[in-house]
Image (tube, rainbow, N blue to C red):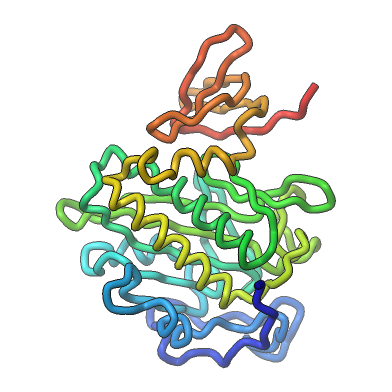
Length: 309
């Protein structure tokens, strides 16, 4: 059953405001930072009570009113923090997507969070599956909790349908952090939740609200996302990072809107590859079959879905 939208709770003074600046006034209002009743703040106390528990993955959870980038902040703490640290911002002023693209949105209009993972049991060469794992976990949580069909665009974009059109409503950015025995991965997840058409950063973007979500209450969405991520990460880690044994590879492929599509891949070195996305290999790379029949795995680059001719 999808949770109904609540009025939210008061700002939580137990958050860690020392690492962020004061929140800005909500767009379109002049009555202070919490005047937008359609976008209530998150409560760190409530989220900790629900998610941080002995034996669980999540060990520390902070909610800050505003910061430049949760990924940058958490990466700076990677050596000192234990695995399972979670940092959530009500607003990001310098958020980044893949290829260093900017990611900005009005305060409390979305979910902007980063988590620190240190998968010691998994060979480093399999860590490249983590952004895809996060995509599966996030899409699963959003579909169940918001009631919105969510697809994955390789490697880590979240797609929803708005007025019959496929649009990006979220993305994932994975970055290595720390060194030596304390090395880990910071996973950043950004989701447009309540953005209206006039607030979208680009015309082709979308949001859960525009896609007809049954609920846009961020509290249950954050809880569902982190619980789903904990489950998928635990299964993957228990399998030593094996994408087949953990069922990650087949689940990602089943929800991937890129497979079976004609695509253009913009590759490093100013190369362009055009063909059909036909498979996902054991390293998480997208296999593109060209018109000449050659099969080429793509591990990095920008992939564009082409319209059928």
